[in-house]
Amino acid sequence: MTEVRFTVNGTAQCVEVEPRLTLADMLREECGLTGTHLGCEHGVCGACTVLMDGLPVRSCLVFGVQAEGAEIRTVEGLAAADGTLNVLQRAFQAQHGLQCGFCTPGFLMLATWLLEQKEGVDEARLREVLASNLCRCTGYQNILAAVRVAAQEIRVWREG
Amino acid sequence: MKPARFAHHAPRTLEEALALLATHGEEARVLAGGQSLVPTMAFRMARPAVLVDINRIAPLDHVTVAGGSLRIGALARHARFETQVVEGALGTLLARIAHHIAHPPLRLRGTFCGSLAHADPASEWCAAALALEARMVLARADGLREVAAEDWFQGVFSTALAPGEMLREVVLPLPAPSWRGGFAEFARRAGDFALAMAVVGLRLEGGLVGGARIALGGIGGQPVLAREAMALLEGQAPSSALLDEAAATAARHCDPQEDMHAPAEYRRELVAVMVKRALRQAVSA
Ligand SMILES: Cc1cc2nc3c(=O)[nH]c(=O)nc-3n(C[C@H](O)[C@H](O)[C@H](O)COP(=O)(O)OP(=O)(O)OC[C@H]3O[C@@H](n4cnc5c(N)ncnc54)[C@H](O)[C@@H]3O)c2cc1C
Ligand code: FES
Ligand code: FES
Image (tube, rainbow over all chains, first blue to last red; front, side, top):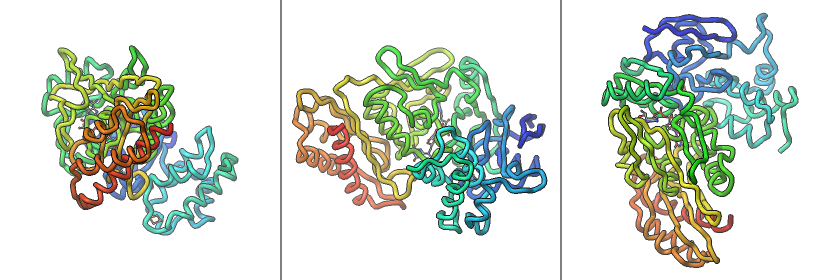
């Protein structure tokens, strides 16, 4: 067993894990943060996307021990402490960017990263980035719309 | 928990990493971006007893121009190449290719050298290495050796890497100013592994083609050079008819494989189209 120290959504964590435990399983089983979903467990679907030191990673393709010293952000960190949804989450709701919701945590974290990029977002970049993850329900158009609306609302949208 | 048990080492220096690889030999694998190794371990197609995680060895994260070459360190991630890493046609070609590798999050983590070490038949960087006359710099605890791209690939997922060695750097010679590159691939969806691809490099001097190299990937087996098509172009003016003939020649002489994604003959037709597109891109650049 290896001791791993890291933060999740700003809270310090110290857990003991086997090296073969993925970051996804570590978050779900050791930290009790089950918002991060596992679809394929081999890097294809993106449901498990979290931010590690500011960058989106497939948490099924990172071992928990690799998060030593890292800052992790998960879907649980998006809403305010009182449960008020953030701009992006509200846009997903308003635009019907989810149906079953299984893929949603991954899309939200991926889009959170995208919206934080200093160069802003245009239609081409929106599509290139959101193509990273799979959704079996929505047909994607409403997910694109949700992130577009959120980008406009926080003024990082660039007309192509 | 899907992978088999292993010991994880995250050394801070290259020397420590090489010492670990020397001690554990065949039992050990380098863990770079993990974007191919971790899925393989999840399926238990790989069960290394020891992982030597190189992600904390900062000096390996470099892309530098030195001595007429572009030197790509073991931790240079795919995403780095999305913006021009070197001026001119080489940087433009690498950027064009980078956008076709998997998806943005995978590109932020997967490495150029990891692709070369993994040697997936549909790896863009592997085909590029062959077209661009890459040299692999292999480090081990007691020395270094270099292997040319043409000797590197030894079949599907198989390379000249020996136990105890790390692919420390890939070196791409900087091409002449008259050099141009081209790239085309076909995949059913953005980010999928390609069903066929072509990477092309050639010099255009006095209106004639010189030193043409055409590498094919994604057709099963290791990436290959389309030697007959390369020979056909040598010293010729790149007319549209000549490029068509070169593309048809490449398709005729290659040996595409059939798998669940595409029949062999379909891939052969794709090769003709991809070579034609890559050549046109190169000569019109
Ligand atoms: C959904 C998905 C889609 C993908 N699509 C594509 C695609 O379209 N095109 C493409 O080319 N790739 C694709 N990949 C693979 C991706 O590009 C990987 O990043 C790459 O194949 C391996 O690089 P890595 O750094 O992640 O290596 P790792 O996964 O860490 O390692 C892969 C292998 O190489 C060895 N290795 C790595 N680095 C070294 C080194 N420096 N020295 C010695 N051995 C080393 C490891 O031991 C292991 O055997 C995809 C992956 C996924 C999950
Ligand atoms: S669960 Fe990680 S990518 Fe599918
Ligand atoms: S909402 Fe069901 S998978 Fe996306």
